[in-house]
Length: 172
Image (cartoon, rainbow, N blue to C red; front, side, top):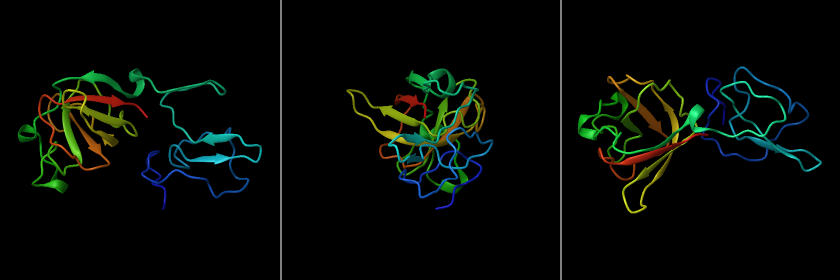
């Protein structure tokens, strides 16, 4: 499977890399060389994973995703009801948020395009029931409608979203 050079995120299966000595664990890349999470094991048993950071970080530090840089905490009633969502041409007549769609429209202020890329969208439908979807990307706030953004999911929606569906966005 070829790597899309315009994105660090891929739906490829993470596994043992079939490469030789051309992997330098200290390298940085302006454009992706491997999918996020691609890993390899050195002969001494050390395991390394290819990662992406949106801001500068020092080598050798333990790092993790934060909601400030890539996610949001629980948000209730931010989902735009499918009947009010802006249709996606490729999925017409299915509207964002409906069963079978790969998109959901939400109202969240001041979000840059693809801030949630590679993360997970977790839904809540009350009493601890919900679903988890991988996020391919998102539009910036005010696209497709003022105050709203659209999130593209890797999997088709299983249970229709409604305006009261709670969501949690977990960063990659």
